[in-house]
Image (tube, rainbow, N blue to C red; front, side, top):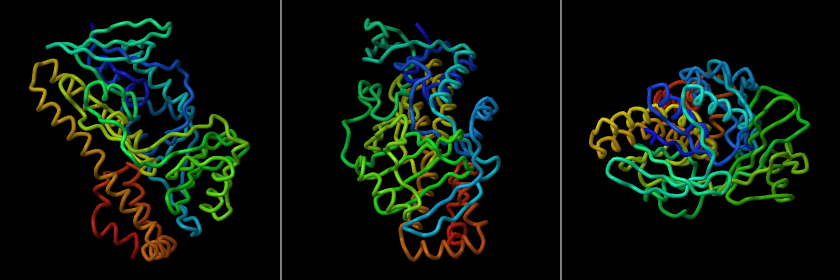
Length: 381
């Protein structure tokens, strides 16, 4: 039996396992994919995520293999792009195949055990859980644990088997794209916002760009190309023929009913999926994994599970809510024409107010610092 079984070896799962192992718990990570794995989403490492990596002691290892980003170029509804400096050390861009591998290796180096297999189900008893999984040879196996951490992404199987998430609801946007080859290496993340969604280009270096179109439906081929041309006013094309590692991910709308129940904890996208426009999913996953250690320690000491669940959920809410509120405010400024026109004039005259809001949105400073009338009025003054 292990103290903690973490299902999922992505940023939320590996950072949780790393923190748990360093805290002295016996921890195993169940991951169905073989690393390095192909995954295109989430390759932007925001300033907030960089801060979390520094706190974990992993920033130097990531930065050594990442492409640096210094600015963001933002255009909305056909306006000319405004270029803003990213705060502090800036941001990073790195293929997820390598990012996830570095984090899982760090967790294993700290004492975690990696297990290859796909999660199947949970059986509960008073002081332990029995988890069944299918190993890579196709055999069904069991592992006992005292705490189970679901880090298996949106529409989490752990959440569903534990009765913590209902069936998929309607709505939500789709992300379509991949790695675009033959591109110029620049240090700017580009975003073009328009009706229904947006198009983002995240440079990876070596002539590659993470190119992603986010819209209400999964557009491909000529439809995707036409949409990108419209959003960027002809500056960019979708160029599907130059895409590597194509993905279509969606619908991007999911939230578990509860983040903790009994001896089961949900982290990262398994607890709730953030719109990629926020750009803070990875940062929040890395930051809130610290609450897994607190909750695990309390559970194993026999504290009341209801109080633990309340505190665990509150920790996630305090990290997520200010950022999503700020993102909604920025999105409204972009989409409401009078506000957009005022903001564009204000930014071109003095970008400092916008860069302060960007610092909060990027996670370099607390989001609540920009959720004040003075800060938001400065954006459109």
